[in-house]
Length: 114
Image (cartoon, rainbow, N blue to C red):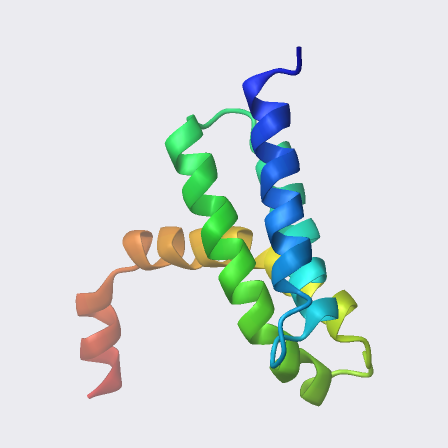
C-alpha cells in the first residue's frame, strides 16, 4: 500500500492535470507552477506538514499568476517554464525580503530620507 504522502501527491497531480484541461486556464503555466511548487516542498525538509502545504499553495498560485509578467519582461516565451521559475523562487525571495525588513532600521531610514 502506498504511503499517505504518495497518495496525496498523486491525487493532487491528477487534480492539477484535470484543471489544466478547463477552458480559460493556461495548462502549461499551471503544470509549470505545480512542478515549481513541488520542488519547493520537496526541498523544504526542516518544516512541518502544515507549513509545507502553505508553501505549496502559495508557490502554485503565485507561479501561475506571475508567468505572464515573466514572459513579458524576459526572453522566456514558454508559460510553463516561466511559471516553474516563478513558483520555485517566490517563497525563497519573499522570505529573504521579510528577513531584511525585520532586520532593517526603519527609523534611521526615515531620518535619512528627510
